[in-house]
Amino acid sequence: MSSTDPTSSASAINLLTSNGVHAILDVLLPEFRRATGHDVAARYGTGVEILERIHAGESADVVIANREALENLAREGKIEGASVRDLARSSVGVAVRSGLPKPDVSSVDAFKRAMLAADSIAFTGKGASGIHFQKLIERLGIAAEVRAKAVMQEGGLVGELVVAGRATTAVQQIPELLAVAGIDYVGPLPMELQIVSQISTGVFSDSRNRDGALALIEHLSTPKNAHVYRTKGMEAG
Image (cartoon, rainbow, N blue to C red; front, side, top):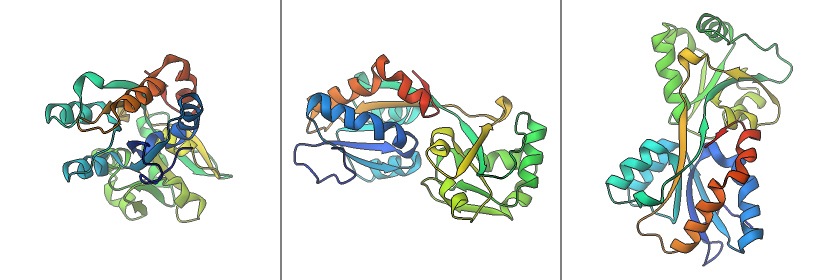
């Protein structure tokens, strides 16, 4: 079965991946093993953390990150540019603790009011959604008010902070919000404030299991698995 321990199998395909596709991989990696017999050892992190780790010398067989990052890594010779495939597009959304009223976030003004009215707001410090959110509150002129009630962690599922009672509201990539039981998804950021991440995958130039890596990429990008991305809050392609 798939594993988060890269030493779990000597012949495992090593995967370095962003947290945003965790719930999708929970479905697709076991299917891949059943279909091919390949184990996959997955290591997760925020997009920023993954780039930091790669530039510090970490490698694997396959990487999943945003398209721009993979294109940069290809130019640096760390990723085979010809291997890069697009998987899905991910947007940022809002969730609240289950049972709380769902605020209106459908317009810029409504979103601003909702953030000001929230008792506490959880977001990531190093994840793409959290970095974007911090820029947004500056742009909207509510940075001081939001930071005064912010509950921030570097990465991971911030919805878990809401479930634990440490915050009432979470802002993160929609698939990461949907992956947490005990919170209610409210909706996406308004279009004017939204950021859409193109999630892609590629093979490391120094992959030790290139055939397995290419097979995994084929499985992750095949159109027949598009429904998995959709059910987990992403738009396939």
